[in-house]
Amino acid sequence: MTIRHSPIAPHRCVRLLAILLLAAGLLPAEVRAQRSDRDAWQRVPDVMAALAIGTGSRVADVGAGGGYFTAHLARQVGADGRVLAVEIGERELTQLRRLAEDESLENIDVIRGEVDDPRLPEQSLNAVLVVDAYHEMTEHEAMMAGIYGALEPGGRLVIMDLAPPDASASRDRQIESHRIGIDLVAREVEVAGFEVLDRDPEFARSGSGRGQWMLVARRPVRPGPPP
Ligand SMILES: C[S@@+](CC[C@H](N)C(=O)[O-])C[C@H]1O[C@@H](n2cnc3c(N)ncnc32)[C@H](O)[C@@H]1O
Image 1 (tube, rainbow, N blue to C red):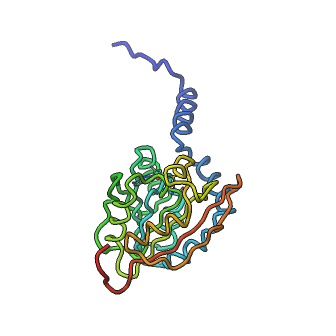
Image 2: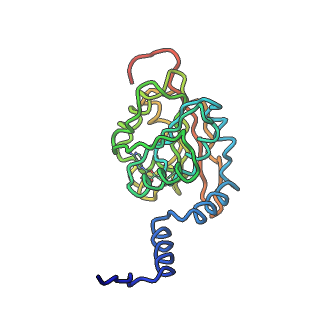
Image 3: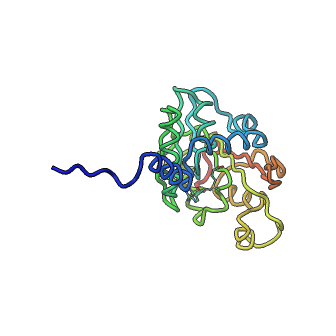
C-alpha cells in the first residue's frame, strides 16, 4: 500500500488557517485588540446603567455583529442571567457562536433573526440594546414591534447609532450615509409605542472621530392602547 504525504506542509497549513480566520474576522488576537481600542471610548458602564440591568437580567443585543456588546452584557448579567444575541449575517452568527465558545460565556444564546423579526420570546426581557444597527434595519417598524413584544412592561430599549452629517435630510438620504439622526429615531420609537426617557445626541466619539448618540426608552409600565 502506498502512503501519500499531504502536498501542503504543516507550517503552510497553519499560515493558511490564520489567513482564512483573519479574512473571516475571526482571529482572536485581532478581535481582542479591536475590543480594547473600543473600550477606550465606548463608555460601556454608562450603557449598562442606561439598560438598568444587573446580575440575573435577561437582555437582547439586536444586530449584535461580532459580539462586542454581547460579551460585555454576558459578564454584566452573570451566570444567572441570559443574553440573546440576534443577527441576520452568516459571518456574524459564526463569530457570535465562536465568541461564546472561546470565552466560555455559557449565558449567551445566538439567534438567527429575520430582516423583519428579531425572533425573541414574548415579554421575556428586561432590556434590549441596538448599537449601530438601527440604520441598517430596512424593516424597522416590524423590528420595533418584535422588540416591544419581547420586553416586559417597564423594560428598557437603548438605541445607539451614528449621527448623520445632515439630520434634517430625508430618512433615505440619512441611511445612504450609513447613519441616522436621533430625533428621527425618537419619533419612530414613540410611534412603536415606547416612552422616550432620555436622549444624548453626543454620547460618545470613536477613535476615528465618528459621533455616536444614545436614546433610552421603555415599554410603558401601564398597558396603553396597542402600538
Ligand atoms: C455595524 S454592525 C453593529 C454591530 C454591533 N452592534 C456593534 O456595536 O459592534 C450592524 C449589524 O446589524 C445587523 N443587522 C442589520 N439588520 C438587522 C436585523 N433586521 N436584525 C438583526 N441584525 C441586523 C447586521 O448584520 C450587522 O452585523
